[in-house]
Image: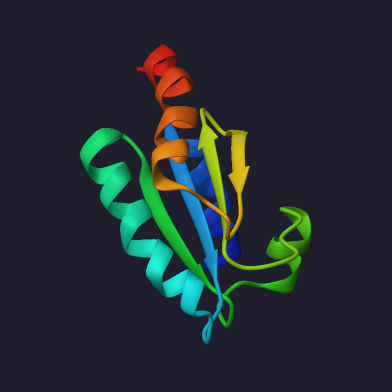
Length: 105
């Protein structure tokens, strides 16, 4: 997915999750399916977009201030409301999403 498509997706969808991951990052590969499963089961309105390091443009990562991987950015109605990195607890993430998601939907 191109940078322009990703930015359009963020603006057009009510809820978007961007997951920036590294090609050789073991934390990234372990965390991604857990985050996807959480969003699919508890927060189904989220559109999940995985952005591999090789496909992520330097312009997009600079614009979104991505300094390390993995980085998860959650958007509601086109606005960033949560950003988290490699020390992400799935249970804590669910608690942080629940209230804003409930208000929105």
